[in-house]
Length: 171
Image (cartoon, rainbow, N blue to C red; front, side):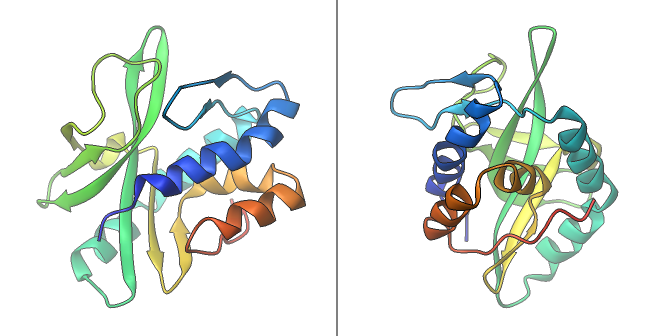
């Protein structure tokens, strides 16, 4: 099972009002979800570190093919100007050394990859990972940051559009 693009579209669109209230950068993209830059960089950095520290959980679960798990995705930073653009990838496979996955978001700041392109990602390159297990988001630490920085109304609206619940921020 691969993570549908609409999940990320819902995340970007529904969390946009909360992010824009805090003066984060928002890039409008016709036909694509708006691109939202985090407004609490320290919390986002903690989310990325948590994902890096727990990546073995993702690898183990991806390999196990446990019933009730699916929608596996990883996030990787790609060079963009003087910084990086973190992009979600789906259709994830693991060969024991690296992941192969498909670019699932239209890049905004980087020109090194394109939507739908297959790329290789080493475990050390991951900036987030996620999967859904029995209707609950596992990992997805950067998603949690954006979700819990939204208003309660925006959180409720977001959850209407995704097939999973979001655990609290625990990092």
